[in-house]
Amino acid sequence: MHDAISVEDLHRPAVVLANEGFVTDGRSAASNKGMPVVRIVPETVPCECSIKEHAETGIGGVMDQILEALVNPLTAEEASPKRKEAEQASRIVFKGDLGEVNRFFYKRGWGDGMPLMPPTEEAVREMLTGTDLTADHVVGKIEPRYGKATVEKIAVNAVMAGALPTYMPILIAGVEALTEQLAQLGSYGTSTGSWTPFWIINGAIRNDARVNCSSGAMSPGDIANATIGRAMGLIIKNVGGARKAVEDMGVYGNPGRYSSVIGENEEQSPWEPLHVEDGLGRDESAVTLFFPNCYSQIWQYGSDDRGILNTFIYNLQPGRGGLCCLIMTPHHARTLAEKGWTKPMIRKFVSEFGRVPAYRHPSFHQGGGWTVNRPETVAPGPMDTVAIIPNPSLIKILVAGGPGAFLGLACGSGMVGADFVTKKIRLPANWSKLVAKYKNLVPAYEKY
Amino acid sequence: MNAGVEGSRGAASYEVLSPWANVDPVPLRGITPRTADLAGKKIGLFSNRKRAAELTLTAVETRLKEQMPSVETTWYTSTRINTPEALTEGKARFEAWVKSVDAVVLSVAD
Image 1 (cartoon, rainbow over the protein chains, first blue to last red):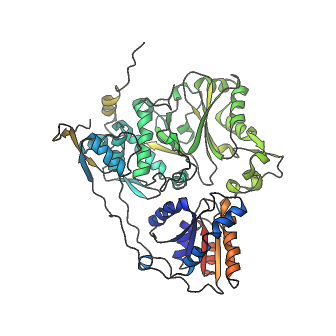
Image 2: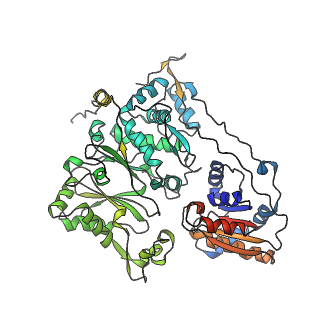
Image 3: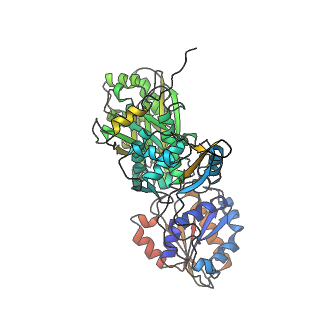
C-alpha cells in the first residue's frame, strides 16, 4: 500500500489489487498514511499464488473493475477525503463494574480475550511509580498506526495486563525496542506469518522482578513472565493499532502472543550473558526482542557436546532462513563450555552445518523470496546444500530452563534488515523501595 | 491495588482510562484525477516481489492488451521484498519510472 501512495504522491493514478481478505488491511494502511481513498480492487487470486491459471481466473473476474478504477472520475470524497476519527480520544472512557468494564473494553477491541484489570486513575498512578519519566513523556510511536506510546498509555495497558509497577522499566525498554527499525515491527506485527514478540530479560532486574529463567519459564504461572508479554501485546494492539484480522493479518495466529517472556539464567551460564555480548555492562539490565513464529523443544540426541549440537543442526527447519535463538539449559551450556565451545563457535557451527539439499529449500536455491539481495546464499544446483541459517550473526544463544534434557529453538524469519534488538533498562530512583514492596508476591504451593 | 468505589448495586465501580493511543494527525490527501480514456496510454505494472505479484500482473497485462491494444505496459520490480520502494536505494529509479507512465497497477500479492 505504501508504494501505491508513493505513486499517488507523484501525481499518477494508482490501482491496487488485493485479495478480498486483505482489503480492510489495505484500507487501514492507506488511512495511516493519510490517503484513505486509494482505489483498491478486491480480487480472488489465492494468497501467494504460484499457479498461472488461478491468477488468470482471479483477475478475469475483476478486469472491468480494474479498468473502471483507472478511468472513472473521482468522487468528492476521493478528491478531498474527510477525517472520520476524533483526533484526540477521551482520557476517561467508561465507568462501570468489573464485568461492565471488561465487556466495554472487549467490544472496543482493546483486549486480548482474557479478563482485564480496570485501569483506574489510582491503579495507573501506582503503575507510574515504576518510572521517573513523566506520564506524558512519549517513549516512541508504534507502527502501524504510529500511536504515541506515552508513559501513561504504557501504564494503562500494563494495569490491564495485571503487571506490577516493577515491570514498568522493562515495558518502557520494550517499547523502545519495538520502535527500533531493526525490530521491523511494521512488518512482523502485521504479517501473515503470525510472528510473535519474544522477550529475553537480562541483568539484575530478572531477580528484582522475579522473571523466571528456569523450570517452565515460558509456561503460565509467573506474574512477570505472564504479564510483561501480555502488556506488550496490549501495547502493540492499543498503541500500535495492530488488531487481529484488521491490520495483523497472521494466518493462524500464535499462542506465543499471549506472552513469550524468558530470563537468561546468567548465574548458571558459563558464558557472557546476552546483553553483555551486545555491549552492555554485566551490572546493567536489558531486554532483547525478536519475532520468531515457532518455538519447539527437542530431546537431546546425546548428552555430550556433539549430541547437543547435532540436535540443533538437525532440527532447524528450512523455510524461514533467519533469526534464530538456540535455548539450552545450564547443564547443556556447561557441557559445551567444558569441551571448549564458545558462543561464537556454536553460532558458526550451527550456521555451517545446519544444512539441507537446496531442493528442500527452494527459495534459497532459486534466488527468490528471502534470498533477494543475498546472492551468496543461492545454490549452484538443487543437489548442492544450503545453510538454513545463512549467517552466524542471525543466531543468539540463550541459557535458561530447568532440569531436563530438552533443547529449545525459537525460529524467526530472514527478513532483510531485521535483527535482534537489545535495549538497556533504566531504573527509577526509588527502585529499592519498589522492589521491597512487590518482591514477596510469590506463590506458595502446598505440598500434596 | 486497583480498588474501585461501591456502585449503586453493591458492586465496585471503576472509572477507567483509555488504553487507545493518540496519534499525530496525518494530513489527508485525495487521489490523482484519472484519465478518461486509456487508449494510447502507458500503464505501469509494479511488482513487490511477492510470489503472486508477477502472475497477477501478467494476467492484468494480458487482458489489458486484449481489450485495449493501443495500451503500452512497462514493469517495475521492487528492490526488496516487504520494504516500501521509497525507503530503498531504488527510490530515484522508482520515481523516474512512475513519472514515465500514465497510471500504475500494483498487486498486494499477499
